[in-house]
Image (cartoon, rainbow, N blue to C red; front, side):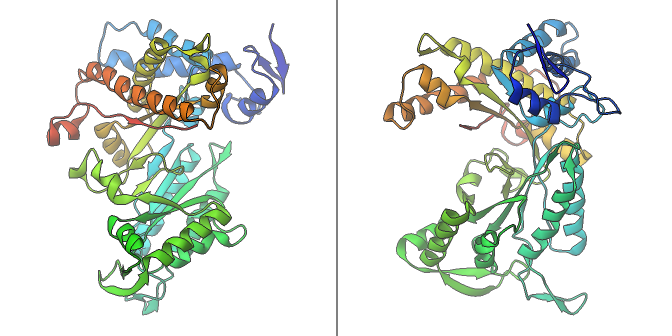
Length: 420
């Protein structure tokens, strides 16, 4: 029997907390704010919308059967896509991606162009990441006015305030990732900026550290600070002292994090398009400028049967999850043509997991044990291997993976993300 909370019919018996979240963020409402769908109808709306693209590549595709498969794995809470897909699939908004990276140039026009796209993306349900390393340092010359530059940290406050006043789809606050290279002259201010109470509340921040910097940390050496406007060395800092400040700040406030930018670009699948300089708000998805990505998670707690992981079921969920997310790329209504072009050319998706702790409990495995570490490693390797298999079938889609095919002859790409 169904029950009712907040005037929502809980036809899946999800419970009061789940219904409260669905009521606030996901379920469709009419103009008077009245809920117009149940949780199961939400999943049906999403499944139908995502399956509808199948006929684009195969006129004889059994769309109803595919939709039912998508619906079933969401209904059973075995697989769930990211929030924008649940909120916007099958609606007029139609923006389904969670992750975007927007470039920030050094001119005032470029900075506020990035602010504009931040507002548009957050309004539609996405989150944004930025690399502020191109901005000239605080106190540097501004030739057009004869004044001095404000620096990256102060300009970040504009993005932060924009996020504060723009609710995503009218349902939730936006999120940002701010990144600064470790060799930027304002790096010390950046590392310590979140120590101020309430400062940059809508940002996670990370320092982009290089191989050279980490080597200098190991050897207790100085490293150079470079003005991004002139490309001239303007100072030196002791790498170990900077690293210790970074660790101390992270321990106190949770920020900044670290991204190993050289290592990321060693694994950049499309280097011909440029270097990766930033990530999405939570840091799990490196993206090129103007690139977006959509994510989905497999619920491992639903894959354990009789104290054992059902690898066959997990493989099936991976394959259908990849198909689902790849379809999202096609039906998505992108904020701009530039984002659409880059995203549809590269087709990055992220398959992650949830319910890891619950799965371990069902398998009688202690969370902080070596056995838990090994099974986690095995699961993610399995997801990576299995995740590439469906893409071999997706290669038949005319016009996809354009840049990969042109540059490398490659025909598949999937980013596996572990989110415990």
